[in-house]
Length: 480
Ligand SMILES: Cc1cc2nc3c(=O)[nH]c(=O)nc-3n(C[C@H](O)[C@H](O)[C@H](O)COP(=O)(O)OP(=O)(O)OC[C@H]3O[C@@H](n4cnc5c(N)ncnc54)[C@H](O)[C@@H]3O)c2cc1C
Image 1 (tube, rainbow, N blue to C red):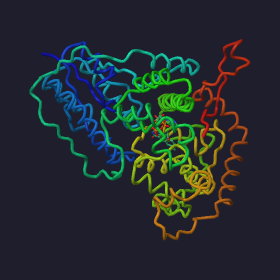
Image 2: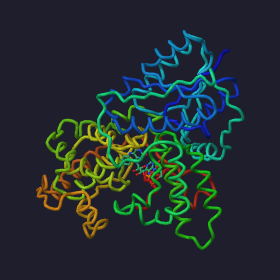
Image 3: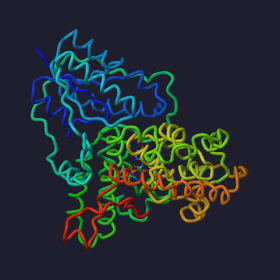
Image 4: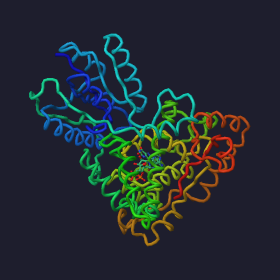
């Protein structure tokens, strides 16, 4: 009896899973996750990512077992694993979600596509976020996002497994070279994703507005859904629909919660907006979004500064405390992430690529599209965003005035002198960047980046009513 392969990647759920739902309509399914050694040898992965995936697959497998099936985990390169399965028992269809991953998964997808053509296997790919493959025109993007989020949740009427009731125990061992698994990180799996969303929608969202900037309040005030979205334990559409349903339910006097949830939805939008940049231009993982900023920092990388940053020894307590928190928990709020990158990019004058590689291993929620776009934005190499420089001393005053956060993560008796004079180094960095920005060639190149990547979300109140023309917004609509 023939079957369809459902290839799970970063979509580790059974509900609202377009690939699984469509495969189920076509007969028995064989669910597959592949541990690709070459992928796990990349510089941007860590043990914490593997373990989170393992926990999520365990939850998925437990669900499938309750229905008499399983998810098979194979180790090997793609498309070799597909060849082996196909030779043992041929199949005609593969179902999966589209993935906007790093350069490695992009190249692997090209190889899988070629293999499918050679073996007359049809590969059905479905979008899982509001990200548009082959997008021609950014002006229509917002409408496409809304349309994706409004579609009904994918339901499975009946799921038949290939070789039902002959399941084998799930084994999933981490490649031995992998390192870094923060003791206090979030755990994977759909049940935990749902519990996190529910506690946020019902209670924690009250603290979202006003609570997300300080690293003291943010761990509770933020939704904490990022890792669950990155690995697809819950779908973006489920989160958007459940949030909108909650907004519709809360009483009119719950003003704070309503505005928190509305602000949260705008972050969900930004999630896809940033991933779209990498989907449209995969090179931004490696190259400056605006090539006019090439050779600005590339040849001045100070390894000693980088080591000091990674080992929480910059001498700026707010920076060092954030590095320690990140090491212990795998998570930081947006403002503190932006501050870390800003310190690396301006006073320390470090190029975003090595810093981004290190942070990718530290962030449990590492999502290449958001990560590389944000690394570039906070480093001033997109050419379209206003330079934002976060002063770590001011951040400490504003967001940790009594030193509670710093005391929580740094030893009380530590004496580390600052690496350099913050004010002088920041001033020099800004003037180097601004000199580049004034270059006529750099100014001219800006329009091309705007055309390709800038958000069209903000509509001019005066013009929109008359001509429905989107006004390009180069700024993110955040109000931290
Ligand atoms: C340098 C840098 C790197 C980052 N790398 C990542 C990353 O690899 N993965 C990641 O998910 N987020 C990344 N972010 C964005 C943001 O910091 C995290 O999404 C957020 O801290 C996750 O916590 P949360 O789920 O509680 O956020 P919430 O505030 O509850 O937001 C809800 C969701 O919205 C999305 N979101 C929130 N803020 C942003 C943003 N600024 N840009 C795009 N999407 C956003 C995320 O999916 C998040 O889960 C990065 C930010 C910076 C400055």
